[in-house]
Image 1 (cartoon, rainbow, N blue to C red):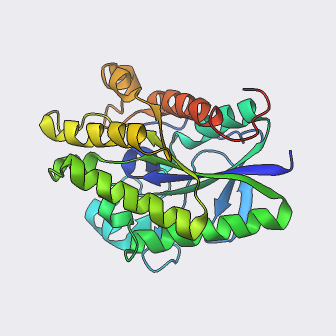
Image 2: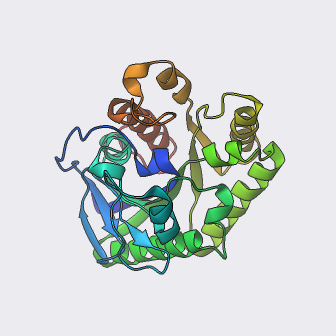
Length: 270
């Protein structure tokens, strides 16, 4: 149990967590979270993530009554909205159970972001790269880094903007290149985006993600469960259209965590 699988959770609101309920605050066995603002490793539990301003200082959580445009302008990354459930604890619980190792979650997501908002030269990149570097340094103080992965759930904003398949593939490859170079990220697990615009624009992003996973050995398609969840109102947030609810995020996290565990090196029980 000396090793840690370090998993960076990147993307926009469905990764940040924008569900309607908090299902549990119990800590996840063998799972931890790196907190950038305090530079510490803590037990993982909901709500996961941190509210970090663009300059790297502490921000404020998105709660009832928060003015959305002001929060988005102020922040580079956020904790789960309203203090509710995200997919991260369910993901890490399943991954740790299958590998027999500890998981360190590094949440760095923010609603309404396009993929370009995370590339080198942006505030998003500075927080993403800085938080990842801090997590790896702290892990090496107490144990061994067994693997480093990015799990990515993003694309709704690029669909809204009408980005092409070629554009999205090129930007996501650029992000993977930068994270491999600067943070040693070995693989990118894709939680395939769902349908947000409900027209051909969604198809451009979905096919971009599928093609990358077929063409580039660094990319793994972890789950396409979004389609089933979107067809079942009980798995969606009834208050925010296009966003998974707490039950949906839990299922999505379990499926994706199992899929990542099966491609990590040195797994014990898979």
